[in-house]
Length: 288
Image 1 (tube, rainbow, N blue to C red):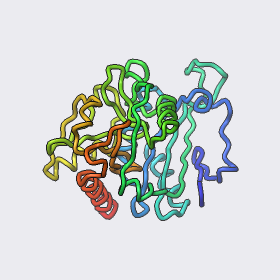
Image 2: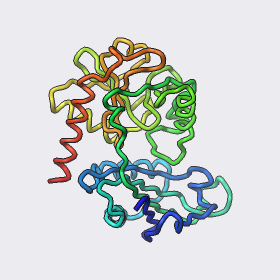
Image 3: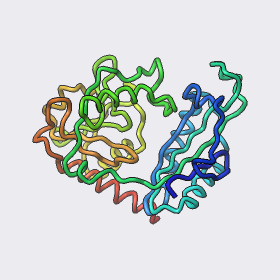
Image 4: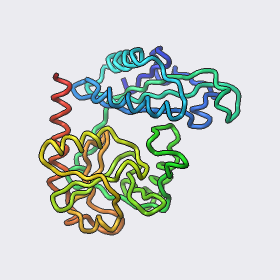
């Protein structure tokens, strides 16, 4: 099945799915979401994603459905889709109501779960690496719209990616208003330099990626030193490796930033090693 939709507990095909044009998720991006994937057909790091889901919803004062009910809906939708491996997107909007910015006028939240076959990134991306652009647009500062909230309002990242694609790059690496590296449009970033991994600190305003945390924890267990700190673009020019991490990408090597290549311009061994560690851990967890 190309795509299966679950709306408030009712399964349907995309052409049968109906969400009101008055829903605040549609009108204002007034929603929270999470994306998970499966390994061997089982949701990976579901607890961690739902924990973050709850934190995002609390920050926006959006009421989530009962967690046990939500987990059952996720599992049943994935099972009903019948894919070998699945991509699963969970969305909760503030709901419908009159056309007004006033969130207190909402009539109640709406839950949508989308499940489709997981599409692996092309092998060439891992073998050859990707090119990223540093766009003019800056990452939202936490005092405006905190990037730590995984909301349905993604225009900041969309505009950055649009700029990158028009310039011929695969992704954008966004800076904050002080010129510090934050994250890519839908991934966290790591730098490997002098036998140490570096990644931007949460305090500067980034999403706390589930895979980011996993990389930090697993790399430390395997004897690699990791530091969360401020990173500026010029530090990439002397780095041995740069990589992006996310639920869908796992660990993706970056070989060019703007017009400058990273080290030799070819993927290094650290990105490959970390991806192997993540995959081994994932298969261990789903087999437990």
